[in-house]
Amino acid sequence: MKTLLFYHRLLPGILVFFLTANPGMLTGQYPAASFTAGTTQHVVGAHPDADSKQSSEWILYTRDHTGIPYHTIWHVLVDDYGHIWLGTDNGGLVRFDGEVWTVFDKENSWLPGNMIMSLAKDHYGNLWIGTSGVYGLTKFSGTEWRTYLPANSRLPDEGITSIAFDSKNAMWFSTNKGSLVKVEGLSVSNEPVWTFYEGEDYDPIYNNHPGNYITQLVIDTADHLWMGTLQSGLVHFDGTSFVNYGMPASCGNGVLDLVLDHNQQLWVGDRNGNLLKFDGTGWELMEPDIPEPPEPPYLVYESIVSLAIAPDNALWVVTDGGLIRFDGSEWSAHLECNAFSSTIGFSEGMVLWAGAGNDLISYDIVNPFSVVYNTFNTGLPEDDVVAVRTNNSGHIWTGDRYTGLALFDGIIWKVFHEGNSGLPDSRITSVETDDCNNVWVGTQGGLAVK
Image: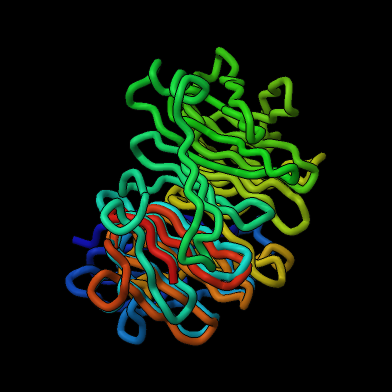
């Protein structure tokens, strides 16, 4: 019996099917192509909807000529060279340079762990990778790896949840045990200055919520730190004191993601699927005005996955039903898909990159068209990307939840993990790049830099 396991709709006019048997079930309905990977039949087909303005084209990528990992993509980062970096769930770090996919994991690099929790880039172009568990923070310069652990540095604990850099290239990071740390000179100095925030001004935020930790860090133009927390809502730090702004009572206090736009407007997505705007003093609950089914283009969602600001200052909301764009006055729905799982990044030409379950999706915003990348047609080690960042060269770094770090320079994918690089763990929690093109990696086994 031919069974349709699931499908998701990338754009009006493009459907992706996953079948367990003969793709002939689509014969006479949709043009299709198929291939076999293991015991699973994968079919990519295009259906020209009556309401679609898209051409009925389809693109098929197979694992036979690529090495994309097979895990969820958590983070997407576009570096200054336009390369796409993916942080995956137990698949390591992946880089895509436009043509070649490179997977970095603990088997082929110094990446300490394969579960990538966060990705970030510093002012020098380094990629920083946070992994989950006991593997710390990793820096990748493009050629060299360095991992920071409690055993070889002043790192307070190994699990890195978020990484950010201020205007002076000082690194701020948070851990899954609630620690907040600032490090000055870590990218370039052998004697960096570590500052740990604790005491009565900081601890009350956590003492009331023992399981609390920072989910996201962002830094504004005044170098003030904004923190989204799991149970204490929004917290602000001006360098001297912490102020807890909480959240509206109707929304709870769980911040999932937050971003600052070019006007320094703060946007917050909470754990209940709410989108909020914070102007520094008060909250506004936003309700995206998008068409309801069956009027196209529409999407239905219940939760927010992540937020991002595009180069044109438009807000992009990644949801469990697809992408939503807000340009300051109008809302629009894009890429209806129920599998989005990561942060998103933007490369040259207004191309959006996002993790969608086991796939990486590239979406041309100006000339709407999407391409799906996965373990079958790229060098991604696994399809569980948790972080994506770009460096100054335009290269793309991706961190995988379990299998390390990948670098894509537009042609070749390289994979780094704890077995072939200096990464302390292949489980990546975060990735960031600095202005010197170094890559900083948070892992479950500590902090690493390359």
